[in-house]
Amino acid sequence: MKTTGNKAFTWFASSYFKATLTDSKSLAGLFIGLLLCVVNCFRYINFANAINASIQVVENYIIIGSTAIYFTGILLGAMFFISDIPKKNGAFYFEIIRIGYARWLLWNIIYIVISVIIYSFFVLIVTSGLSFLVGKTTFANAWSASMKQLAIGQSRLAIESFHISFPYDSFVGTLTPYKAALFTFIYNSLYTVVLATFSMFVNVYGRYGAGWLFSILLHAIGYTTYMNGAFAVPQKLSLFSCAMPALHYSEYYRIGTVYPLIVFSVVLCLLFSLLLDDKKEPSL
Image (cartoon, rainbow, N blue to C red; front, top):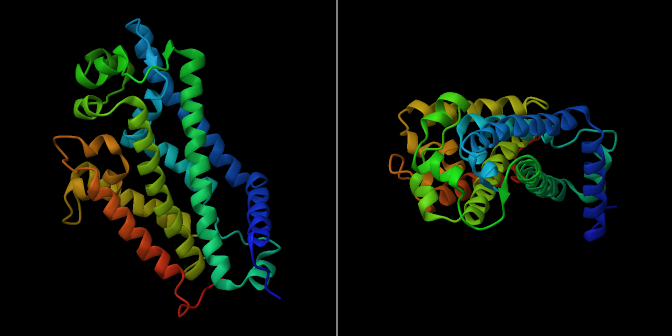
């Protein structure tokens, strides 16, 4: 007999979160995310200390979310965190029988979205918390002198001594820090949801357990396109470029803010429709 309603979803979500928090791969994902947050944050904090300037509390988060190599590291942690969705545990077939296959798929998609939001919030808290605890931090909704040096002045000291660069003066000149952080949260999360949903699609209709490898391959293609242009796709049209909001305001990329939302909406609608297609035969 199928179970319906909020109680059924609560049961489903709680069982998944319990499995996630006791799974070594998921915990490894959180640890990787934490470690890379700390390493990348200290570059900017050390630069700010070197010029004896303060930092705005969310600036580290913004830099990580729009710097390709940093965001890739954080993304790797996210993929470990939610790579094995749907979770094929002891209650796997019981879940499908209890709630129905179509609803089970839909709830897995909802679980992905919730997990990505939690992970993105975790990264925001860690980066902001570290900035507050270690750096000279301000909560004012204005860019710090450190960010102005980094983005507008494009400090050679930051590049040569601390190996950090953020050449997006238009981004800093257009948005306030909290608005920039909100955009970073939204676009980073949308991109992660795309990769996680693609991973789930491979797990359900392809080879279970191989989804995360295909998602990393998809990211590698996007990263290559972002860096050099590839497969006849201009750099600015890369899905990965859409994930980093500072590029949307870059005079070089000229992506704009509407195009990434359209791309993510189309890609996610396509993936969701393929996942929920009752004519497909799952391989699980």
